[in-house]
Image (tube, rainbow, N blue to C red; front, top):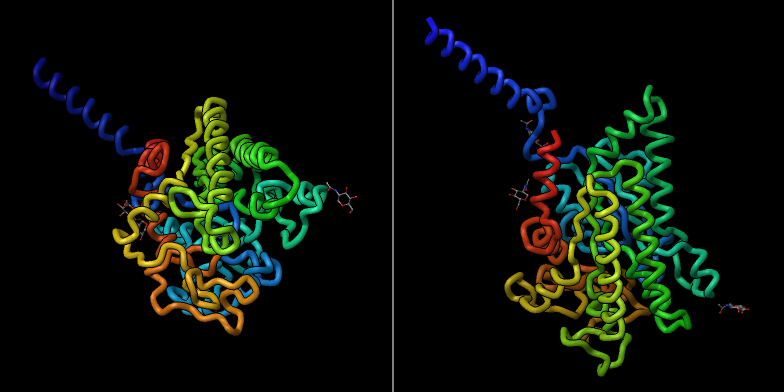
Length: 382
Ligand SMILES: *[C@@H]1O[C@H](CO)[C@@H](O)[C@H](O)[C@H]1NC(C)=O
Ligand SMILES: *[C@@H]1O[C@H](CO)[C@@H](O)[C@H](O)[C@H]1NC(C)=O
Ligand SMILES: *[C@@H]1O[C@H](CO)[C@@H](O)[C@H](O)[C@H]1NC(C)=O
C-alpha cells in the first residue's frame, strides 16, 4: 500500500516535472532554427539593403544602383553596395529569416524586421559637419535619423492600432535582435584632412553611438550586437589616395587605420560601462577589425587572391580605382571572379568577404560575448 502510493506520487511528480519542462516550449512553439522572429538593422552602406538610391548616396559611388552591382547573387542591382549579399543578409539566412526589408521601401513586408541602415550615414549628426564646413558629399542621415525612423515605424505604423502600446512594444522590441552594423567610418572619411581634431571626432562619434544604444536599451532592447569598424585604411580607396610611405604593419594606410583603431578602443570601453548599466541585456561587440585583419593575413585560407585591388573599377594597375570613373560608370569594368577579391568597388567589400565576415562572427572567436551565447540566452528566455 505504502509502496503503491509512493510509486504513484513519484510518477505524479515526474509527470508534473515533465509538464513544467515542456510546457513553455509547446505554449510558445519555439523554433530552434529561428531564434529571433525579428531583426532591426542600423548602419551605413555596409548594412544598407536598399534604403539609398544612387542619387541620395555618396557621390563617389553614384552608380551603385546600376549594373554590375548585384551581379553575383541577385543578377541585377538591388541598391546594395556590393556584387551580392551583405553581412546582414547572411545573418538573416542563418536565422532562417527573409532578407530584411529596407525601411524606405513602403511596399516591403516588414513583419520580420526592418533595415534602417543608409549609405553614407554618420554617427555624428549633420549639424556637426555643417558647423565645421564639412558638408561636401555628406548625406543628411545620421544614426539619430535612423533612430527616429525606428520610432516612427513602431509608433506610427506597427503599434498604432494595437490596444496596448506597451504590449506591442514589448513584442516588437524585447524579443528582437538589434544589429548595429558599422557606423562612424564615414565620420572620419568626411573630416579627413580637416582642421577638426581627430580626438574630437573620436569622443563625439563614440558618444553618439552609445547614446543611440542607450536609447534602444531604454525602450527595452535586450539583444544587441554592435560592430566595431574594420580597418578602413585597407580599403582600395584609402590606399589609392594616401602616399605609399603611409603604411602600417598590415600594409594599409596608417593614418586612416590609427584613427579607426582608436575609435574601436574607445567604443569598447564605453560598451563596458553600458553593460554595467544594463545588466539584463546582452550587448555583443563584433570585432570587425580583428576579423578583417585575420583574413588579410590569411587570404588564401578564404579563397582570396586580391587583398587591395578593387574588382570593379577603371584604370587597372595596382588598385583598379579611379575616383572620377568609379564602378558602374561607363569606362569601368568588373572582374570575372569577385570571390577572389576582398574589395568590390574601392569603398565596399565583395559578397565573398561579407560572407566570410558573417561566418567568422557567427562561428568564430570574434564576438564578445560569442554569438552562441546570445542565441542560447534568447532560447533560455522562452
Ligand atoms: C547558422 O550557423 C550555425 C553555426 O555555424 C550553424 O550551426 C547553423 O546550421 C546555421 N543555420 C542556418 C539555418 O544556416
Ligand atoms: C522553423 O522555422 C523554419 C524557418 O522559418 C521553418 O522552415 C521550419 O519549418 C520551422 N520548424 C517548425 C517545427 O516550426
Ligand atoms: C565656415 O565657413 C565660414 C564662411 O566661410 C566661416 O566664417 C567659418 O569660420 C567657418 N567655420 C569653421 C569652423 O571653419
